[in-house]
Amino acid sequence: MTPRDASDDNRWSNLDRPPLNGAALRRGLVRDGGLWCDVDVVQRTGSTNQDLVDLAVKGDAEEGAVIVAEEQTAGRGRLDRQWTAPARSGLFFSVLLKPAQVPVARWGWLPLLTGVAVATGLSRSAGIDTALKWPNDLLVTVGGEERKAGGILAERAGADGVVIGVGINVTLREDELPVPQAGSLALAGAVTTDRDPLLRAVLRSLEEWYGRWREAGGDPAASGLQETYAAGCATLGRTVRAELPGDRSITGEAVAVDGDGRLVIATAEGVQEPVGAGDIVHLRPA
Image (cartoon, rainbow, N blue to C red):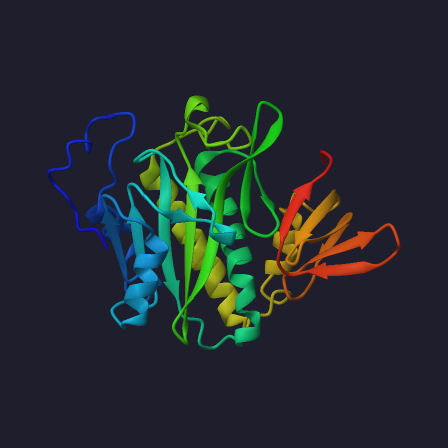
């Protein structure tokens, strides 16, 4: 983990993007009986996910540890894609969860659960409509079109832990977008781009959803997770192309998210095929 660097001459160079206050975040989020045990804000690191995985494997991090980076130089998305953004332009953080009372077979719901929590927390705090693209992209509407404003990456951390990384574009401007299909909360008309209340809202929402899911033994139906995810999933009801491992692809209508968190695609041949991993391309507007 990169240590805090008080001499960083970029720290106050952009007053539209003030730094996060780690002490204030800890006071607001860490409480007796709560999930979050520590919130560590670092100025710059390669990947918060890698940092937290390393700490967890060494036994130096407990469940509820949170690492937030003002800047990531080697942030990762799914399929080892790179995620980069200007310093303090977004929320880049990872959390460590250890759902011991949930069967490992249901841990695959954690990234979808995080998507629901992020979308719910941002809708409340930023005042914008959000949607989820299966399995783990956060969509916002900019100029009448859907754009990706965030992503989620879950990685195992030892035998009993999962580290979940979240990246959200908050104040990214059009000229800073990595690709034209990207977006940000600011471009979507958020009522606030103050990252402190946004991060608090997302982490509180994640604590709430994780507690509900864990109390239900990870059952996505009993916890309400499966229904809520489906209600907020922009992929369902669309014609999609699933690009699968092994250079295979299938095209059809996304009709459901099943009990294992897989996307069910109905093909023109009348076959319903569940997809557990792959890239999904939306082929027509909702």
